[in-house]
Structures are given as C-alpha cells and as structure tokens.
Length: 307
Length: 259
Ligand SMILES: Nc1ncnc2c1ncn2[C@@H]1O[C@H](COP(=O)(O)OP(=O)(O)OP(=O)(O)O)[C@@H](O)[C@H]1O
Ligand SMILES: [Mg+2]
Image 1 (spheres, rainbow over the protein chains, first blue to last red):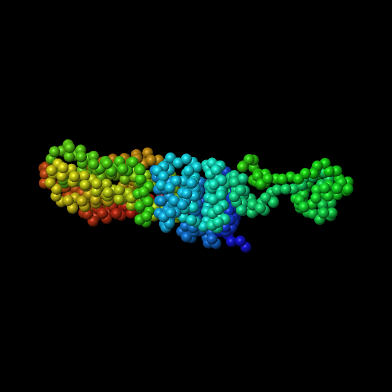
Image 2: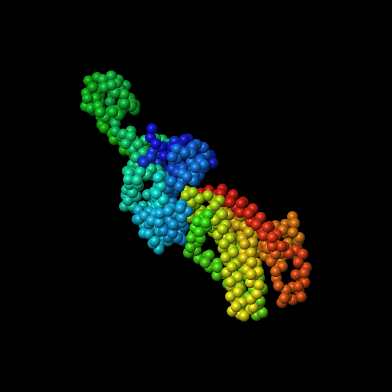
C-alpha cells in the first residue's frame, strides 16, 4: 500500500447548481510528481484551492499527510508551497521586497532563503525593478520562488509554466524534477498541456467536467493508451472464435462486423493472418496502430484539440 | 501580530498617496498663522484638531482603509497570505492597527507643526502636555469615529472612487452635524446624539477651549453649551464601544469575502 500524501474522497465543489468538481478521488504518492491534466474549466484550479483551504468543499474529504485538512490547516499549510492561477504580488514593491513580506509572515528562519529561491528561478536578488514592471514570465518565476522559498515538503503548482518561454519551461521542468528526485519532495502539478505533463509527471490524473476519468502512472497510461493490431476482415465473429480457441487470446475488441482490434502485441501478426485465411476468412487489411497519449486523452475527454 | 503590522507598513512603501497625505497636516496651521495675526497656541491646536482632524484626516483614514482592505484582493495576494496561513481576522486587525497608528501619528505631526509655527512666530507656549493629550486623544477618537464609514466602504466592496465619494459624504455629513444644535445640545443618554461619534467628540473637545481671549459671544455660547459637555471617560467609553462593534462587523464581512 503506497503512502499517500494527498488523498481525497468524493471531493465535490458546487458553484450554484454547477458542479465544478464532482466526487473526485485523487491519490498523490510520496516523492512523486502527480500531474492533474484537464481542459480549460475542468476543475483543476478549484481542486487545488480546496486542497489549500482557499475555498471550502461542498462535500467530501481531504486528507493530507493522513490527516483531515479541516482543523489542521495551520500545521498542514506551513509544510506546503503553492502557486495558484496567476501570480499575486504587491506592484509597488520589488521582487525581493515581496518575498521578504511573505518570508517574514511565514517565519522563514534562513536569511538566504529569499536569495536562494530567486537564484533558483533565475531572478536577480535585491534588484530595483518593481513587480509592476516585471514581464509575464518574470512574474511567474517570482511566484515559483515564493512557492519553494520555505523549503516545503509538498508543492501544489497550478499551471506553473504559464507565460514562460521554451528555455524557461525547460529550466522549470528540470528543477521540479530535481526537487522530486534529489530532495524527495512530493509535487502536484496541473496543466492543460498534455505533452508537458507527460514529460514531467510520474502519475497522471485526467479530470474533465470536474470528474476524474482516469488515474494511472504514466507508464501504465502509455501502455493502456497505445498499440493494437487492427484487422479488417470478412467475419469478425468467426475471427474472434479463432483467436479464443487457437490463440487462447481474449484481449481484443470487436468494432463491427468487419473490424476487430487485438490488444496483445505479443502474437505474431502473420500467424493470425494465416489462421484467419486457413479458416476461410478474407483479410483485406491488417496493421499496427499506435494511439498517442494525446489521442487517448482526446478520446476519453471526448473532445477536440487540447494540446 | 507585530510581524503582520510591520508587513502592512512595508506594503505602503512607494505609495505616494500616503507620503503626500502627511504633507497636508502642515497646510491648515500654516494658513492659519499667515492669515490671523493674533494667533495663540490654544487656538492653533484647536485648528489642528478640528480642521486637520475632522476635515482632512477623517476622509484620509477612510481612503487609507479602503486601500488596505482592497489591496489584497486587487493584487491577488490574499491567496498567498491564506496559504501561509494568516487568518483573515488577524489580517484585518493588523490593518486596523495601521489606520490607528496613521491617525495618531498624523495628529502628532500636526501637534509638532503647531508648536513649530508658534515658536517661529513668537507665540508663547503653555499647557503643552494637555494639548498633547487632547491632540493625540482626538486622533484615537477619530479612528473610532471613522469606523462606521470604513465599515460601509468594506461592506460595499466597490471601487476606489465610490469609497472616496463615501468618505467625503461622511465628512460633510459630520461637519453639518457638529454645527447643528439638535445633535450637539442633547444630554447623554439613550438618544441618537449620544451615538453619533463626531458630535460627541466635539462636545468633549469644546470644554478645553480657553476663554482668555474669547469675546462676549464666545463666552455666552460656552455657558449655554456647557451642560452638554462630555467627560473624558464618557467620550472614550462611547467611542471605544462603537469602534469595537464596527470592527467586529467589519471582520465578519471581510472574512466572508472570497479569495
Ligand atoms: N468563483 C467561482 N464562481 C463560480 N464558478 C466558478 C468559480 N470558480 C470556478 N468556477 C467554475 O468552475 C469550473 C472549473 O473552474 P477551474 O478554474 O477549476 O478550471 P481549470 O481546470 O482550472 O481551468 P483552466 O485550465 O482554464 O485554468 C469552471 O466552469 C468555472 O466557471
Ligand atoms: Mg485553472
């Protein structure tokens, strides 16, 4: 039984009559990166806000480090670093001054914490530039610095790469990876960009219209989503019988009278074709299909373009 | 809590409005000395308290409060604070503390200005301790007197401009009240006049006017008015109570406003 840092049970949030998050059960394991993937408006931000106590769930339960969040906010939140939606800072202060305010309120003891955090995200320490003069990417970097400044054990990052340039994205990706691999941090990250999540996450939760459609490790998901052998032949019922009797195989699906997919790639294609033909079937087409993670994602969210 | 208050002050860095606000404290006493040749310290201090205080500081405190209470929402920093976590009640208390210190500090600068101008123009100094007490006391009372208006602003949770309009309306409204006998000349008790903060403060302040240089009209007014003076414990008691009530209400409203 893996150790869950975050666990939700039937977590639900209603705004009016609309359910933004519906009976969500997510499981974030210790020392892993969990990617919450969903289209715009899927409920990623709402979920994260509930995990941070920023908004109260309508129903359901949140457990962080095995304890209910409700009633333990003070202890729990001080061990979490977070970034929710757009960066929020005081425009009349510099980045360093902004961080100093939050460090003071958090009681961060280490004097170098601010400098280290800024170094990590590639912003200058004690720069004169005010937050209002920052570029979008700089603002996002400052928000990431705020999230990691107090060396939290758990990071909750809502679309952390928003507004970053490709080099910035790669940098952030590699240091999130580092935080996880080298310092054992647990990270929950959300994104609507599949490729980003698949590059970074160990586990993926796919959320759509507030509901969790799938929760798997990336490896399992890739297996699940991808390859199969597609046959177009004269009689799928008979072909199915051949697969069951001759190949002892039941991992296949019948699409219609003439189309059939075999999910077990271990069986040689030529062997199956020979068997079909010997039994009097006409095989007009056989090919290996590779469904990308993206196709899979599109399929289960029932939607058009996402990535 | 102290940390929260210090942070509130850090947040005001480079906010020109508040630096400029302190300059206004010099203007009225200066004009007063320039226009009136027979200025005396007592009158000068009254000007600091009554004009600087009730005409300028009152709307300024409300505008400052609107700024403080809207800024976390405007800059989207509330979520960062809540995640620390900082309780909204304590945050609100820190903001109250800033407004209080601003009010008292403003009056203190006014006090200093009046003394400076007196020294420069050769007006004799006297009763400085009483004047200091009255002036700082007025600052503290003004803080409480501004609370109902600040509550209104926070409760409406509307734009900055609306807040400024509310602030000026409240100031003018109070100015009218203080020259209106039906609110000034009422004995303390369970009546509206007792609970209107600004008239009560004036009924406290007026008893300390020195009558040395006063003319006949002034003396006569003083005598007619004297039964309605409010004692120091009474004025602080009433305003403390009102201040607390409105602060509690405001914390309730502030807590409800979402992240
Ligand atoms: N304060 C609110 N009041 C009413 N509805 C809300 C509120 N916040 C979010 N919603 C609704 O909840 C749903 C989920 O929103 P949420 O912000 O969680 O989506 P998201 O997955 O973060 O999307 P995005 O990728 O665009 O950031 C949306 O339909 C949104 O309109
Ligand atoms: Mg979002």
